[in-house]
Image (cartoon, rainbow, N blue to C red; front, side):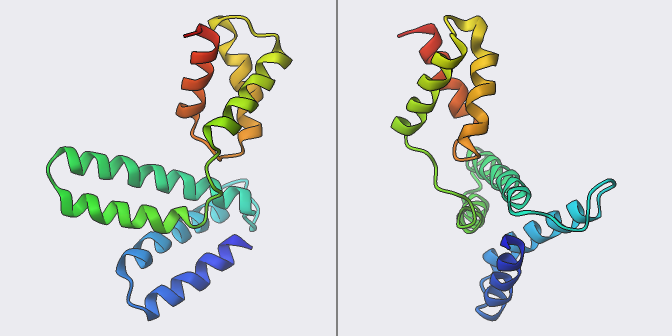
Length: 150
């Protein structure tokens, strides 16, 4: 299970005195524990839920790094970026533009989308297929490009 792997990796990072990996992995494990104890949730958290939690943490790291860079705090941005790289090890690889375009084209054909008004239907068809291998922002931009034309 992914949560068990993260726990094992945390122990190894602690032994290696890798402070950035320890910080990132502890945060993910805290989020997993919160999910386990949340109202209406069972004791077990499956790998898909863990990946969703990791994606959220990764997004937070990306946003923080950007904010720090914009504020001229490069050392803090570097810390956030290093933690982001640790988190990315546990996420599936991003889809290439060609793969994503293929999924979008198939969804447009299935939904018979013809214009910008069909954006929601196409997004609803594409996102489950993407499975977290591309951000919603990236998918949305490509779908808009296809529906609006060049």
